[in-house]
Image 1: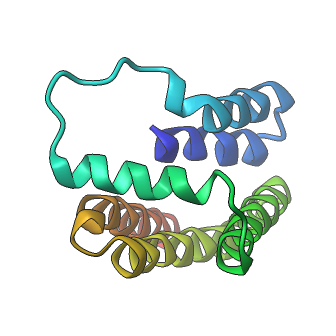
Image 2 (image 1 turned 180 degrees about the vertical axis):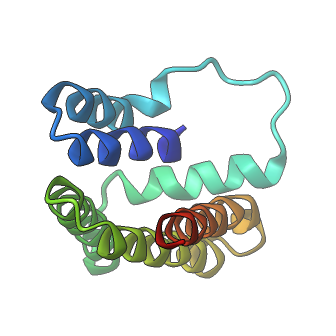
Amino acid sequence: MRPVFGFVLFYGAWLNDWIILTVGFIGLSTSWFWFPKPKVISPLVEEFINIERSYLTPPWHKAKIGSLVAVLVFVVISIFIFWYRWLELGLGLMCIGGLAKSLWSFRVAGKSGYIAAFFGFFWAGISILIYMLYSS
């Protein structure tokens, strides 16, 4: 759900709409709690979720803090870029963010990161597609 709420967040920034921006931010911040746990979970998905959860909880070390700061900086810069309607720069950043998420998923989670990496590549592909549609 986070990619959907990320889209809402950045779309709210694009429209300069504080309400949509707030909905996207709240959705991103609370996405873990919105849906009940499925009855059947792939062991790889469960492993990846546990790895992500470990990055959001103590103990803190440089790699975890660096990852969290990088994500926060990415979100703030992205909101700024879309707020001022710099579409090409924003889409380029979304593409880089999607690829970075994919690389992080592979590097940190190995085999269990494949599904998350797919969504990062998907996000990058959507960014490229929007750019191609916009520029034609």
